[in-house]
Length: 266
Ligand SMILES: C[S@@+](CC[C@H](N)C(=O)[O-])C[C@H]1O[C@@H](n2cnc3c(N)ncnc32)[C@H](O)[C@@H]1O
Image (cartoon, rainbow, N blue to C red):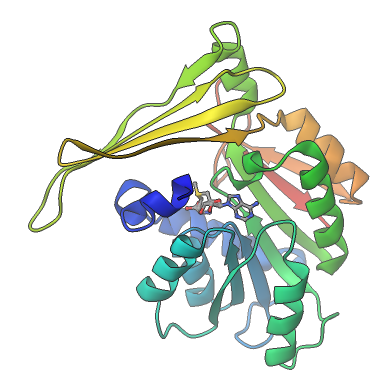
C-alpha cells in the first residue's frame, strides 16, 4: 500500500480544507479579466488528494477535473463529494493526464482545444516527481492553458528545508494531531525527510490511531528549489513567474517561508 492510500480515510482530519486559499485560487481564473461561469470555465487539480480544493473550485463556478495517482484517495474524494455538480475525479498521475483530460473534454462536448482557465498542483505533489518528470508535466500542460491563465504550483519551501536539514541529512516537520471526538479516534501524524540531500530524500511518515501505530512507510521525494522550478517553467514556455510565501499576498522568502507558491503565467 502506498503512503497516501494509508491516510486516505483520515486525510481530511489531518489536512483541513482551506476555503480562503480556494477563493484565492478561483481569483486566478478571473485574472486577465475573464468571467468565471459554469459550463464556460474549467480547471484541473493535479494530485487532488481527497478533493477538498477541487470541490471548492467547482463551488466557485469552475468545471473541474481533479486527478490523483492514488486510487484510495480518489475513492475517498468521490465518496466525500458525491453528487457535487461540475466536479469529476479520475485516477491519473501528472505524467499521464492527457488521456483523462481528452475524455473529460469530449464528455462535456468542450473540444480538446478549448483551453483551461486554471490549473493547480498544490500540497507538495510536485516533490513526488524528479526534474525530468516535472519538466515533462510542465511542457504538456502549458499549451493547454488559455493565454493569460495560470498554473499555481505549491510545494514546501525546499530552500528553507535544505538550509535547515542538509547538514544533518534530515528535517522533522511539526507533528499534526487531531484529538478523539465522538466515535472518531485520536490521530497523530509524524513526518520527516530522511537522507536529505540536494538530489533527494525519503519522505518518512507514521500514523498513530488512538496511540497505536497504524502505518509507517517512506516514499522518495525530490527537494525542488524555487530557482529550479522557475527554470523548468521558463523552459516549458511559461511567460512569467510570480512567487508567494502562501496562498495570498505574502511574499516568498527562501530563508523563512513555510510554503513555496509559484504562479506560472501562460
Ligand atoms: C499531500 S497530498 C496533497 C493533496 C491535495 N493537493 C491537498 O493539497 O490537500 C499529495 C498527493 O499527491 C498525490 N500524488 C503523488 N504522486 C503523484 C503523481 N505523480 N501524480 C498525481 N498525484 C500524485 C498523492 O497520491 C497525494 O494524494
